[in-house]
Length: 320
Image (cartoon, rainbow, N blue to C red; front, side, top):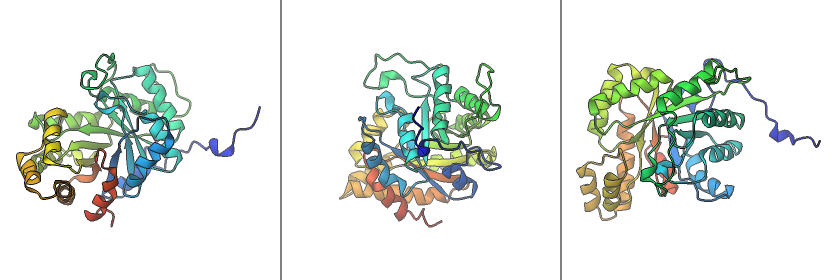
């Protein structure tokens, strides 16, 4: 049998003391750095070059890149494939898992496979229903929801067993994340919902887009009252709007998106709506940074990834 190349046989390293994974993102957050993550638009392609082309403008500004898992119930390159490619190339990555498409057996196996490939961050999502995607006839699974997924991966990591109780030889070292949506009803229950995810094992939180700062500040006040900001790192979702028309479409068609009329009116009045949307995103990032309990931002620039580095630099987030 031919020996495997040495670069394929990497030691499976234990995380530093006090850390769950030792990932670049976990290190940054635990060090008190205002972290930046960003979402990668996954390609409809089998060519790894397409992944790296999308990742390059994100990597220079971010602590980790999210590999989305068929978001919107639309098929793209898999999140585990993207995570493996980016990790192998030295990028920090966040492996997203949606509960929509795989049962508990497949998910637990994927977690071990991702860990074996060096992936150290995972975002646990219930997932959009198949009816909102471009293949509505697909059969949904939803064997887990985000809470049971968090509990399962935490058990695999901390107790070294599968759900069946069968032992795992080497535990997956994962920094666990979840999503939250602070700016849509029921407002009064959003922080309590977040508490359940943190109780289930979430260590970092990425929120949906924040365009309504008053609503987000009210959410963060309740988060601080419950002490949740001391139990998990909260990254607020932001992104550049291309136009008032795009904002109206997002508000009408994307679940969980709240964009105030004032934001749309500002884009309507702008001579250059695209530039105004970028400026608005920068302003939001700067103001969000001043809110107590916020540990970073999560940039979602769909098909505008080339702007992420500029936005982060102009917001002054890379001088820490």
